[in-house]
Image (cartoon, rainbow, N blue to C red; front, side, top):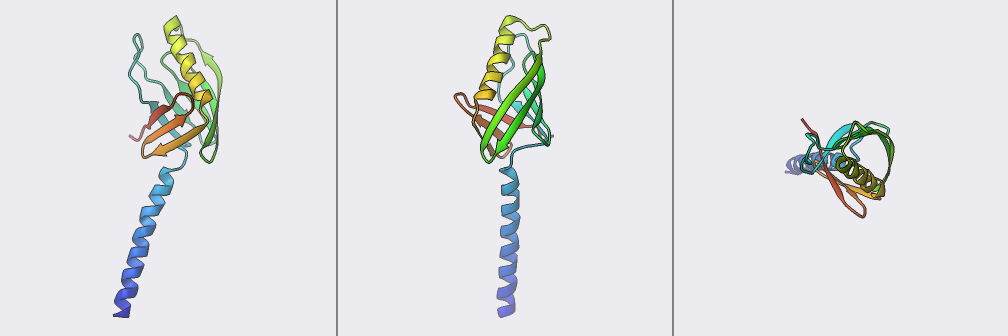
Length: 134
């Protein structure tokens, strides 16, 4: 009977470990991944903004019209985003204004949170991105 109890305790401990490990990984900042803004396409644009974040926080930014580079710095749930130079790509004034506002909103975000495949940057305006998991 004690052997059965020991075996069951070991099985429960192993199952608990399997549950905890993926949950911890899902809470980590998605370095090395690509994510797309949870938004509709804008008039005159076929694109939806996305971020491709490297292992050290270096980021390729593709907006509705503009594109360029940036850098994320992360400490716990605190985040800082600094945009680099953006390519103008013959944007209309309306597209450029939307792109500039999105960059400003990313730069104003102070915290982040991840729930499954959704990453939210929290600031004066929260921005939700979906991880590209395909």
